[in-house]
Image 1 (cartoon, rainbow, N blue to C red):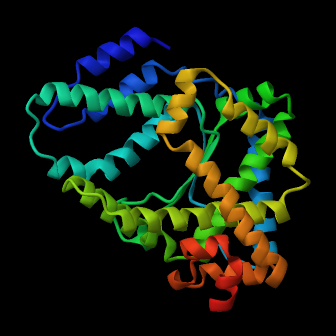
Image 2: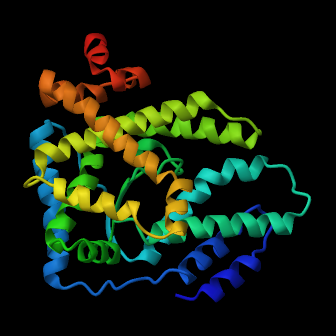
Length: 320
């Protein structure tokens, strides 16, 4: 890890765009230790077994037909940063095309490059697993693969810091991420639904406006995505995991002032709110109508709960 090289890379950002994406990747990786990927055969087989077990249990439990992504990777932090630079580049493309020419383009490029490299470096040091539906990727949805990533050095580090069993913690992360694969498998329309809201929101920002409806609809849909995954986890995981969740939440609320500010700016508190609000909604629905009733949310876009229904599941039950 070389902070001086990271800063030097950002200040040397070049090119014609408002972001130097090569410098973003280089700076983020310069300020972030890659971490070891020296996996034993037992550990590598453990990841594979966890993913397979999660797939089989979730298929049987939710009566959902879905396949794992073709891309399932055990990554170090630099691998994750490279993969997500591509994601950020796709999402930011409309803004880069439409943003007016800055008064001081070189300064603007350095600021944008530095901001994004800081974000990716921070996330790269904290992300444990990721199910990536590859929104805004080129090609038709049927031709676009999804991806599943495990950031091994972070999983090892966090398991150690929480004083929990690494195999159990690794398995918990696998079940959570495969739960997202089950959702997207149950709802082939979901990628397009989310992508449309992302595009509307980004296009509005590029025009100097804020499409509040698009962002509200995206938040509601993501709350359903996170909440349903929590419901599946409740039913599918080997045992109670309240201790893992409590320890991880306590760790995330700690840290120094820079870490707390970064979490706030990156909306990580919002993600936790989505987990809690969505899980409360789906548990109420499942208690009333069973898991099959809760799974009706994925039959069509109109079955997604509204913002009001998330807090009043009885209204969703009456409507759907």
